[in-house]
Image (cartoon, rainbow, N blue to C red):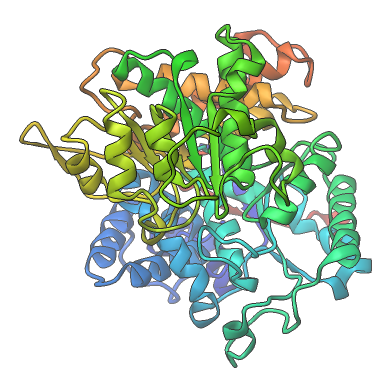
Length: 564
C-alpha cells in the first residue's frame, strides 16, 4: 500500500480526520510524527477500532444519540467512520440517513460540534469565488447542496439542512465508494421562515427571514457560476429545495453543468426501478398499469415523467400513456381547467370529461379514494409527506380492482409515511406488493416474517453520481436515470423468484452502485455526453473511483533544501 506524506505532526495530525488513525498508528509512525505520549501505548488495528466503536454505538439508547456519535466519529477519523459504516451498512443506514437524519437536521444547532463543508449566505455573494478557492477543496468531484427549505417531509430547517448534505455524501462514500476527501457538503443559508429556529438562542444559522424572488435567484446564480468556474467537471446534486424552486432550478442549470435534483430524478428512478421489479410479481406489464401518485409536487411529477418514458419505450403511445396517470395534491385529482397548475404538472392533467361520470365522496373534489374506486388503479405511490394518507377505504377500493396492488408509501422520515406496512398487509389480505421510503420492521407474510423493501434513493443516486464522475459526463439527462432504473430492476431478486424481495439487500448497495454506475456511463456515451468508451473502459473507470476505508502508511514530509 502506498505511503502518504504529511507535514502534520503531533496534535495537529490527530485533529485531521483524513489522516488520523488513533491507536492504530504504528510505533514507527509515532516516532516519526511526534505522537509518542499522545496516544495509549497499545498499538491497535482498524479491526480492533471498528469492534470498539460498534460496541459503544450499540450501547447508546436513542437514534439521535447514535447519530451524534457517528457524526463525531466522522469528524475525528474518516477512515474509521466509513469502516464502521460499510461493515454494518444495513444496521447503520437508518441512522446516517433517513429516518434519523431528519431528527439530526431538526436538532442540528443543539448537537453542533465542528464545522464541516461550507455555509454560504447572501452576505457572501461577492466573495464566493474566494471562499471556494481554498486549496483544501482542490480535489472535489462531488457536491451536495441544499437551501434547507424542504428537508424530507419536515419543512424549513434553515441551517440544519446541512445535515442532509452531509448525510447524502456519507452515502456517496458508504454506498458508492467515492473518496470522502473529494466530496463537499454545502448549505446555501438564505435565512429561514421557521419561527422556532429564529427564536432559538442556540440556532447557528443566519438569523434572517428566508430570501426569495430576484435576490434568491441572483444568489443561486452566483453560486452556480462560482462552482462551474472552480470545478468545471464537478457533479452538483441539488437536495431538498422547495417545490417552488426545485424544478425551476433544475431546468435552469441541468444543461449548464453536470447536475441533478435527487428529490425529482433520484426518487423517480428508484420508484420506476422498483415498479419495473413489481410488475414481474403481479404479471401485469408496465404498459397496462394505472398509476395514482399522491403528492403532485416536483417529486411526484418526476416519478410520473420517468414512468411515462418507460411506458413509451415499452411501446405505448405517449398520449395514451399520459392518461394512465392520476396525480393528486391537496386540492384533489389534477384535472384540466383547474387553477394554479404548474407547468410540470400539465402533461398529466386528466380530461374533465374522463371523470365527469364518477361518483364522489365529496362533490366538487376528487380525492384519493374516489380515484381508487373509479380509475381501476393498479399502482399507488405516495410522495406527499402526509402520514396516514393511504386510508383503509382507499386501499381496499384499490385492492378490489386488482389481484396484486402495488403500493409505495415513499415519504420519509418514517413519521411521514403515507401508510404502515402492517396495515397495507391487513387491508389487502396479504396481496400487496409494497416498498417504503423509510425502514420498517418485517411484516408477516404466509406466517413468516418478510423484510419490507426500502424503496429509497440510496439505491440510485450513489451509482448515478459515480457513473457520471467516472466517465466525466458533461450533463446528466433523463436517459441516464432511466438506465439506472432499469439496472436496478435487473438486479431485483423477484426476477427469478416472485416470492422474493423487489430490491437487493441494503448490504449489497456498494456493488449495486457499481452496476448502476456502469449502466449510467454507457448511456452517457450513447448520448454523446462524454468521451467515447467501451464497456470495459467504463467499468475500469468506475472501479478506479472506488475508495476502500483502509489505513495507509504515513511518512513525514521532509523539506527539500531548495524549499528552505
